[in-house]
Image 1 (cartoon, rainbow, N blue to C red):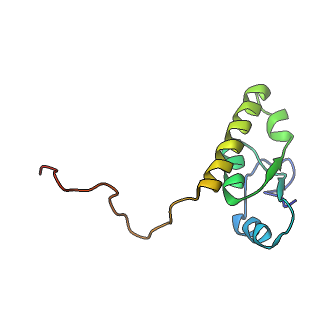
Image 2 (image 1 turned 180 degrees about the horizontal axis):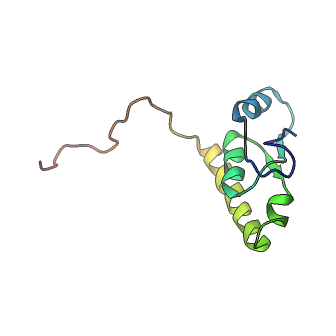
Length: 105
């Protein structure tokens, strides 16, 4: 269970490469434990390939804990689906994804 950041800090994932290395070399499910502060942090952990997230403080310390719990659930589901779908390759230069034939200038 790698830490995203110090327990209770809510700093998010400080070193995604460390988590990726653990995932690539592990033969057991990987759960991020600690440091997740908001839904986007949870989505990133899941997009990296984590199998789950343990959390408490991000929900317990939120101004609206029930709403934060709902956001976390959606982020975790979305992050996992994005991981399973496989992201597009990162490119150094942009290229249009739509054809230019038939356009007017």
